[in-house]
Structure formats: structure tokens, C-alpha cells
Image (tube, rainbow, N blue to C red; front, side, top):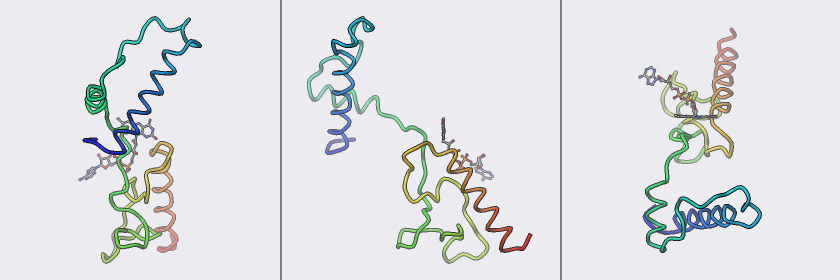
Length: 121
Ligand SMILES: Cc1cc2nc3c(=O)[nH]c(=O)nc-3n(C[C@H](O)[C@H](O)[C@H](O)COP(=O)(O)OP(=O)(O)OC[C@H]3O[C@@H](n4cnc5c(N)ncnc54)[C@H](O)[C@@H]3O)c2cc1C
């Protein structure tokens, strides 16, 4: 967020939100813009940097896959370590476009099924 495409894209999102919020169509519902209001480019960058926060979807740190960065295989087994699986949001290869709780539950269910199948439980 120091500079570059992510900061610029976020700035465009803020511009768009301001445009919608200040539009004639919403005039009856809006008293006034409270923030950020019309700022200089540098002040807007600071506003974005100060306001940006995580949406709590930390994931993908032990991704499933086959490339050099992958940590687990499709059965969630850790490459190179016997008898160790990972079954949580960290195995997601990419952050999903939707929320992460439900996919995490499915990952857990898939892990328990794989273990039951292999152990003939
Ligand atoms: C504030 C917040 C709001 C969220 N809101 C939503 C939402 O609205 N919708 C949505 O879909 N997702 C939401 N998420 C994301 C969702 O909660 C996570 O993606 C999901 O819980 C990930 O599941 P997980 O099993 O990977 O990890 P976790 O749910 O974090 O489970 C990890 C578990 O391991 C335990 N643990 C950690 N260390 C140890 C240890 N050494 N020994 C034993 N146990 C240990 C922890 O106590 C915890 O119970 C939110 C997350 C946060 C933080």
C-alpha cells in the first residue's frame, strides 16, 4: 500500500463510492459527505493507508497443489512428512472470492473422509 497499482485501484474504488454517495439519485437520502470528502491526491493516499484493514480471510500459507510452492497434496498430506495432514484455510490455493468459513468446513469434511477411506473406518 505504499504506492503502485493496489493503491491506485483502491483510490479508484473510493472515487467511485464518493461518486455514488454524492450522486443526484441519492440526494434525498444523504445529508452530507462526512469522509473522506474531496482531498488532494497525497491526502487521499494517506486516508486509504490509514483506513485499509484485513477482512479476516487469512489463508493459503500451506497451499494445496503440485508446484514448488505447494505444501500439501490433494489428500491434504504434507509433502515430505509422513502421517501429517493439514485441514484448514491455509491449504486454499487462492483466497476464495466468497467468505472462507464454509470452504474451511468442507476442507475439514474432505480430510475426515480421506482418513476414514484410507483407514477403512
Ligand atoms: C473477526 C473475524 C470475522 C470473520 N467473519 C467471517 C464471516 O463472516 N464469514 C466467513 O465465512 N468467514 C469469516 N471469518 C473467517 C473464518 O473465521 C476463517 O476463515 C475460518 O475460521 C478458518 O478456519 P480454520 O480452521 O482455518 O482456522 P480457525 O477457525 O482459526 O481454527 C484454528 C483453531 O486452532 C486452534 N489452535 C491454534 N493453535 C493451536 C495449538 N497450538 N494447539 C491446539 N489448537 C490450536 C485455535 O484455537 C482455533 O480453534 C472471520 C474471521 C475473523 C477473525
